[in-house]
Image: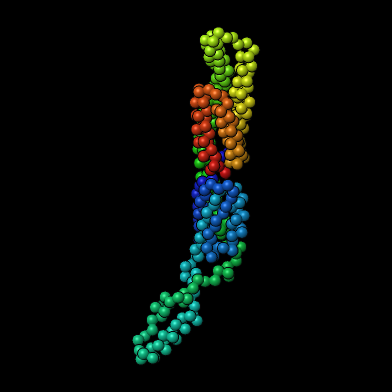
Length: 294
């Protein structure tokens, strides 16, 4: 079953400690690269997050954002009384020097740096926080994999279409291949015959046969055709298996391109060359898709 490396998944849940939301985006990458933004409150849980992600994903560049909002916004902050007292004392001394009797507004002092601070999250048991985060993280990963699987199914259809196209061109090449030597023999006999008749000479049949044998050996593509047919079968079996691997498919597609390129260079035939060009175009389309398969 093919699975794309590109996708998006998100989930959210609310508990006694507040609301946790997780958003995950993935793109293709040679290995698994996780970039997690958990915020100050959830940073302590990064090892657990990493372990869960690796249980669900094997390849791709993963951007994960997790946010936690406390059940009560007011309890998330505290007043730094020492800082507020120091601001008030300094302002009172300045008023005395300036002989100013205007009342001091505590609300304005509260807006000064360091007066309002976030509450200390270290008092919250990490196990309780993980119990809230874990199911949300798993749900987001499952949603992500559903999207990646849907895109993988679409990619599978496209790959199988191009695979069938390559097989059709290869079958046509199989029918054309025996005619290459026959065509060369006819051209060789015609050119040499004309040349010899002009000069009143003759050439032994054995010499022509030797030349044809050398040409036949040089242009023989039977081995390449057999190997390419094997690669096509391997590719089809791999994409249909439950453990489809992008790395394995990438290797097979490289071998397919190598054999196709060799057929084009050895065949020495214009019609076969046209089929080879179409096959290369199909292989390139497949290669681009494979780069995004997990």
